[in-house]
Image 1 (cartoon, one colour):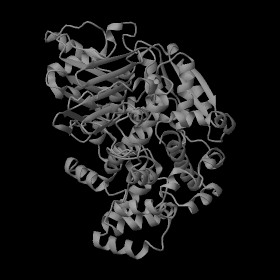
Image 2 (tube, rainbow, N blue to C red; image 1 turned 135 degrees about the vertical axis):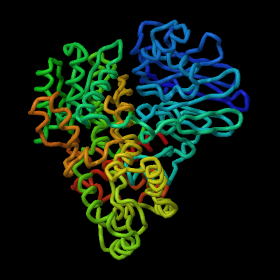
Image 3 (cartoon, rainbow, N blue to C red; image 1 turned 60 degrees about the horizontal axis):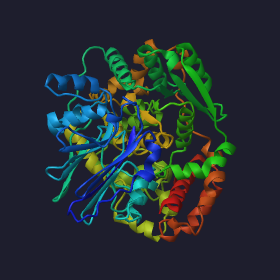
Image 4 (cartoon, rainbow, N blue to C red; image 1 turned 90 degrees about the horizontal axis):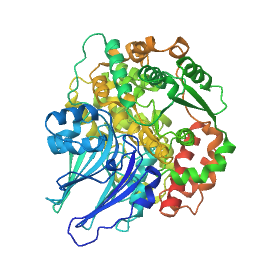
Length: 613
C-alpha cells in the first residue's frame, strides 16, 4: 500500500529530519506528505487502493484532537466490520479509508486493537502529548518494518535502502548476520545484515520514548485459535473462502499469480465466486522447461472466465535487466524465484494494476513439501526413538566422515540440536570451506542454528500437544516463509508499485491449521493431503491430480553466467575476510543445483554489498 519513514529524536535536540521519501517513492507514487513536530518527522508515500480519490485519506493521518498521528503501510481487510463496531460506540468518520479505522481502533481499544486487525500492516503511531511512539507489525509479517536507535535517535522505515540512507546510521556489515544469511538464505528473528539495524518481528509491537525502546509480543500463531469443529475438509473450505473473500477488499482491480498448482488455483477459483471473474487478471511465468505449468494455468483461467497473461523468461531477457533487478532487490536472496515475482509485478503495473494475490503459505501450514515427509518419517521411525545421549554419541562418531545433509544431521545430533532447521543453500561442510578468517570467527562465536533452541522452547511451551509436523511448520512460518517468500512478495511487488497479498496466510486460518494434528493434515505421510481433499470440490481434476512441481528458473544453467562475475577476489566479502578467496572458483565452475544455489546466494549478496555498502 505505502512506504513510511520515521525519525524521532528522543532527547529533543533537533536531530530529527526528513530523509526517506527519495528512497521509497516506488512504494507509493500516488501521493506523499511529511508531518513534523518537536523532535519528530513522519514521512509517507501512498499507493492508493482504498478510497483512492479522497485526499483526506492520505497520510500522515491525525485524529480530530490533534494528539495522535499515524503512518501506516498495508491493508486491513476487516476494516468495514471494525468501522461499524466503532460507529456503534459513537465514533464519527470523515473518510472511507481503513487508515482512519486503524487509528480510531487504537484510540478505542488501545494496544489490544492490533490483534483484531485482519490483514497486513506495519504502522507507527505518535502520541504528541506523551512524546512516545508505538510501532507495530502484522501477525505473520507480510509487511516489513526496520528500526534502529542510535545515540538517542530512533529511525524506522519500510525498506532497508531507506535505513541505509539515514545519516545517523552506519553501513557496517554484521558478520554474524552474514553467516546466518549464508546458512539459511536470509537472516532470522530481528537481525539484519547491517549492524545496529533491526527488523520488528511479526506479531510484535515496539514502544519508544525518552526511556528507550521496549519490544513486546502481542500475537503468536500458537496462542489460542478456534478449536477444530466438524469435518476438517468442510471447515477448511469455509476458512479459505472467507480468507480469499477478505483479500479482495479494494477500490482498484485485482490481479493474481497463477502457477497451475493447488494453492494459486484455489485462490483463483474462490475469487471468481466472490467477484466478476472478467475483472480479474491472472499471470503466469514460464522458463521453457518440461515442468512448465503455464498451459494448466491458462486452461484454469479460461474455465473460470479470468483473463490470463503468460510471461516467458529467458536467460537473455534477464541478463539485459539484471543490474536494474539487483539494484531493486533491497535485500539479497538465495531464491531465484524472486526474478519471476518481479516479472509478474512488472506486468501487473504495465496493465495498470495495483494489487496482486499470491498463493504463499499453504505448504507451510499444511505440510506440502515432499522433503518434509522424509524428515517426518525419519523423526518418527528413528530420531525420537533414540535417547538423546545415544544420538549425540552417534553424531560425534560420524560427523567427520559424513558430508552433505548426512553430515548436517550428524552435527545436529552431536550438539543436541534439532533435526529440522529449515531450508539451506549450503551444507555445513560446504559453508565451512567457503568462509574466510572473519567468517570462521563469526561461525565459531555462535552457530547460526543456535537461536532455534529459543524457538523450540517457545513451541514446546505453547503447543503442549504439538507434533513434529507442527514444529516444522512453526520453524518455516517464523523463518523461511518470513525471510524469503514474504520479503520477496513485498520487495518485488512494491518495486513496481504493486501490493502483494497472501490470502492463505490469513491469521485465523493459520491459527486453525496449527490446531490440527499431523495425522489429519498428512495421513500416511501424504503431502498436504487434507488441503488437497478440501479443495477438490473447487477445482477441476487436471489441477487437483497434477503432481507437485517446483517453481524455479533453471538455476544450474543460469547462476554462473548471470552472477559469477560478481564474485571476485576484490569483492567486499573477500576483503573483510568473510569469504575465502579459494571458495570462489569451485562455485563459479560448479554445475550442480547445490553449487548453483550457493553461487546465487553469494552472488546476490556480493552485488547487494557492491550497490549498497
